[in-house]
Image (tube, rainbow, N blue to C red; front, top):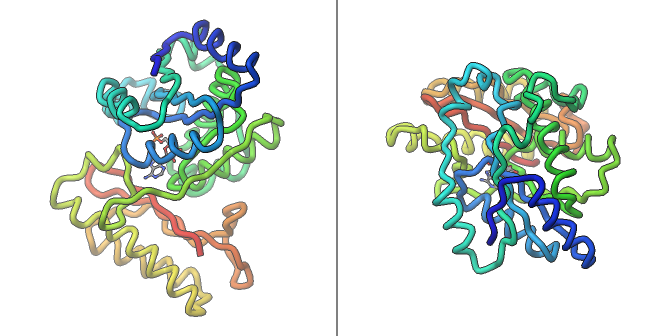
Length: 286
Ligand code: AMP
């Protein structure tokens, strides 16, 4: 595995592959890799000849980045152990792309062209993290043009993000297949996440409650309960009683995340809640 930090070197490598007619898979991440990320790499391997994993903590998607504080500043940056994890896989990752902020945003972030996906970016996580999905869509569009993959692989843990990506890729005609991979979980079904490390051991024991509430909601719906707001209210109360600070717990249409009606067949229940210093998200399809 070759670690590349500059766009010039990346382009040279990508050009050789494209000249040879090889299909490239991209796995974009912010690093601090865990088994969930590695599962995406395996999926990439099954779909292309060449694999590029990117690690870039993207300031544009953090509201506190310009202040150089908070979540952006504290986000775990663990390049060496990430390199070891990727090199230790039985499959070959061709390139780890770890550009600097200056390499990605040479003109500064404020003056950058931005990609805004309407509606879906402003609900659920978007309501609580204004500007977040603009940052996500913009960095991914840049990475797509840098790496020129035929396929890009993402986790369904970030369900709303996956729909935002599918939308702008379709709207802007990127010739890229977008693949979603089911969430990889700990033994107690807590979704693996770089942010789980912010949990104290006491909070860690409680964290699986989030997924349990999603499972309960799914069973209620499958058992014919159609009063979604009652389901949402009950789950929110349970989460509060368990020490969470819920942002939302919501039953939505799986295709566009609009509020669900009882006659909708394809649903997803999504939740975001703080537990101590960790903001946890999870979702379940119904
Ligand atoms: P992140 O580094 O957290 O921005 O995530 C990079 C990619 O990994 C995104 O596509 C995430 O959806 C995906 N991902 C994160 N956690 C998991 C997980 N537990 N299972 C599957 N994919 C995940």
